[in-house]
Image 1 (cartoon, rainbow, N blue to C red):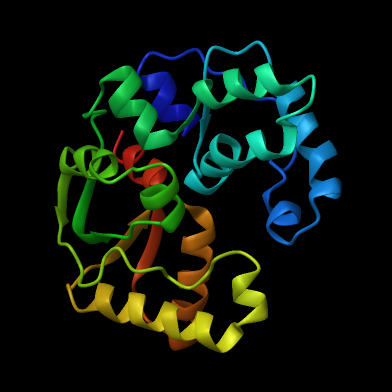
Image 2: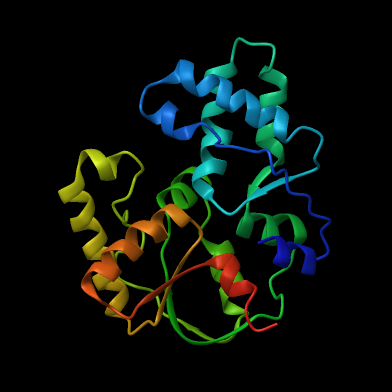
Length: 218
């Protein structure tokens, strides 16, 4: 992702002391434990013009739920500012930079998976597709039920393993039906879940993050 952003003209810094955005604890109901983790996130990314993440899940959480944690705190205004500065990678490329073509090349057939966080929390749909459409040699085919959840859902995959695997199976089978060699998404959590099912079945379908696709062929 950093390589692509720098190619697009950005001056990128990476804070090596950064940790989790706090979503796992928050979603599990441990709001008091999530708060210091979220506070650290706010401190870690203060002073930057923009915060770009390769995960819509993290971005959606920061934008939509930090306000619930810090509504009556001294950090309230910082949280509002943070929500205006944080972007998912494809969203930043299209909406802030106005860049669609980074000169990437990847020969083959692919299909794209809409992550729930990207689609429902960040309202991202067209942005990754615009970027993929400019990748030389890449043929994109939409799969059936493309907006259906892959079944990961964080702690959902642990609490409801059988349902999670069934949902992952449906997603992978729909991807395979397109004849795709690559299954692309913007969320590594989805890709990790789907890759686990693919590996278990011995399928040749390869999962790729959008940033890896855009950084290929240079």
